[in-house]
Image (cartoon, rainbow over all chains, first blue to last red; front, top):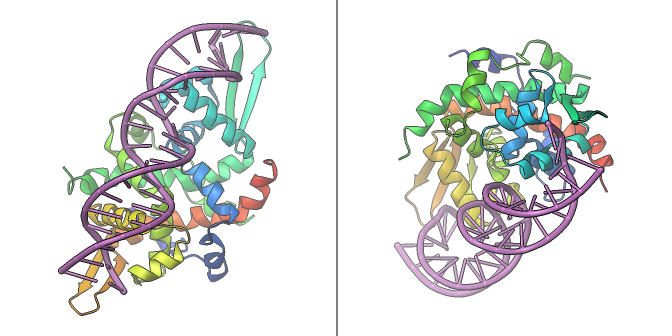
Length: 129
Length: 129
DNA sequence: CGGGATCCGCGAAGATACTG
DNA sequence: CAGTATCTTCGCGGATCCCG
C-alpha cells in the first residue's frame, strides 16, 4: 500500500508542545481546523489546487453545493488568507478564485488526505449498510 | 517555513483520475471525508495517535466534547475500521481505544494538518474580529 | 454572471438523567 | 467507569427572490 511510503517520512505524532495546544476548548487552532475541514471547504480548496477557477466552474465542480454555501465558504477561506478573489470590472462580471501561497501550503497536506479517503472509501464503507 | 519541506515530496495536486472521482455528489469518498474531517473525529484520531486511551482520558483530552458526541464519534470511527475498541470484563468496566493499522495510516496524514493549523492559527485569525 | 438578503426546516449537537 | 435514553435547542444549509 503506497500510503505507507507517505507515512514513512512524516511525523505520525503531534510534537508534545503542540499536543498541549490543540486540545483546549478555546484554542484558535480549533477554529482554523473547523474552517479547513468543513464539508465544502476541503472540496473547494482541492479544486483550486488544480489552478484558478471561476465562480461558476467551482459551482459545477463541487457537485451539490448551493450558491449560498459556495459564497460562504469562499468568503471564509478568503478572510483566512487561503484564497484570492480577483474580480474583473466587466459586464457581465468575471471573478476568478485562486490559492494564495498559504493556501498552497495547506492543500499540499489536504490533497494526500483526500486521495487517501478516495482510495480507502470502498473498504471502509463495506462495514456499513 | 518547514511546511515546504513537507510539501516538497508530496503531490500538491490530485491525480487526474482521482479528481473525477471525489467531486461527484454521491461518491463514497465524500462520506469517508465527512467522518474523518468531522469536528471531533480529527481530535480523537490525533489523540489516539499518541497511543491507547481510555474513554475517560479521551473525554478529558478532547476538551468540550459531550459524552454523546464521544460515543457517537468513537462508534463511527470503529465501524470505519480506524479505531479498535478493547473492553475488559471487570467491575468497574475498563475500555481502551487504540488505532488500527488503517487508523495509523490516516493519522500520518492528519497530524501534519493539525500541526499546520496550530502553527498558522495566529496569522489566520488576525484578519477576523 | 456573481453574488446578497431573507425565511425556514431539520438534523446535529448539548443537557440531563439513568444503568449494567 | 463507560456508556444509553430522552428531550430540547440551535445553527447549518437549502430554497427563493432580488440586484449591480
